[in-house]
Length: 607
Image (tube, rainbow, N blue to C red; front, side, top):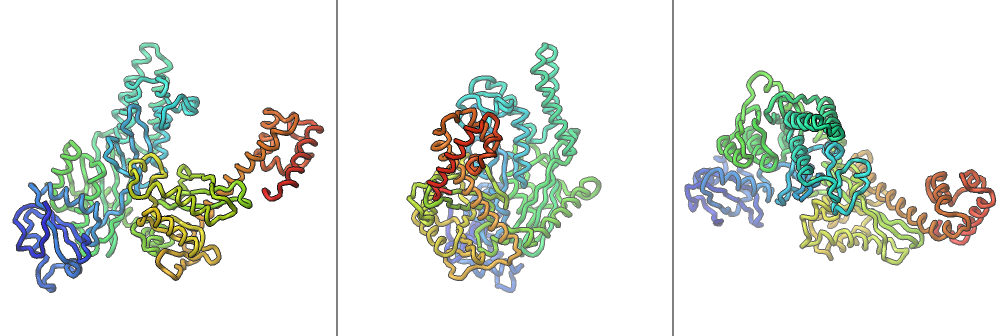
């Protein structure tokens, strides 16, 4: 039950959560307490008696508060963490949005798939992460699919190329039983949890069983899996010697941000390192920063057997009770005071210092620079951009490119054939924006975003052009009812940035990596559109010309393509060059050359 009040006198002496609002009804702070009345009374003192500047600023914006009673302090802690994550209040420590970090997801299907996702859904799937490096996560998935032959297709409509190259076990046609397939999935889960010793033991036992039964082909497959896992462990310097999972956590901070480094130790050896940034830390003590991080981070990330810290935290007993109930196993929080753990804490702190320093260097953090200059609500991790390509309206196409973490995410690129009559680039751009973003209009199915990138809501959309093009995009989004996706226009002449609601352009320094990133995104969308347009032109050309040339059948078409590599090159080839193609005599070469020359003269507008 939630109650609105303006004075702490109305509060009971019971555990619960208090939610502070400003005069605009915005939530500005969320806290928990064992006894609500005692805790909240500390905010209602005279200004000069408030213990910190942060509290003074908070109370200047305070209008009223709500409170929610809980049965226990642990329940209050869980509720507080969930409310902070949902509302991101201005005066709470903010863990940078975990959605930008990729997770490895094992789907909840009869024959599960494994893929990267940035959305944690309550869909019965298994999630592992977060990973701060998407490339490493994808590499791990490639390794898993190759060695355990996990399916990657969505629809299971027959053996595909992956089966032909021995990278899928083809459950779609029952070439593997569900029991055997799920045995592989269980082994993959052990790998993702760092249980290398357990999986190697299982595999060796199974290999020996197949050998004794003289099933040597199956034994060889298991042998290769063992060897590949061992090679991977050697590359990562992981030796499965100790069955204990640990996170060693080091923090460094300045006045406004903190960098946290988590060194994950699995089976006694370093497995991976994660870097996370905390914002809005000004006014909080080191202990409070560390405590808030533990609560927010482990509300989604799996907690290990031991968490090693440089100092103690607040509410340790309650946090441990919550984590143990959540994870289903015993958990210890240890303070490193000497020996090996203290060395690891120092390493983590050193890495945190480096991460914090790099995060404040504008030239090395284009996403952070864009967030600040464009006043974005969060880091523009997922950027989308579009381009139109046509010649006098012929074969008009549009491209959509996607950049994630300032790098091209080519699997998310999309091509569009335009329905708008041309030439009219302005109207065509309006068409492609409508087609793309109608999928995320109010009422869209958010669950589809985990399997279809066209349902992901971008952090920033780049429009190629100035005020006019940006205004058109704003109208498209307005007509779709979308008001929470930032737009920016990049005008070519002076490389100025335009944002909605601001008449004057934003000028980034010419050497700014943020400007270079936007230029790269724009140029990549242009390149991708032109490539698609050429493909359509070439395809139309071969259908209308090559297929009509007497003597040019399927084999000679293949010979021409093999010799010239692409269809545009055939179109531009000389008579002598065509003569060099295997299987093409001089008479046929002359026919081909003359036919193409006549076509070029008749259709100059398509060149």
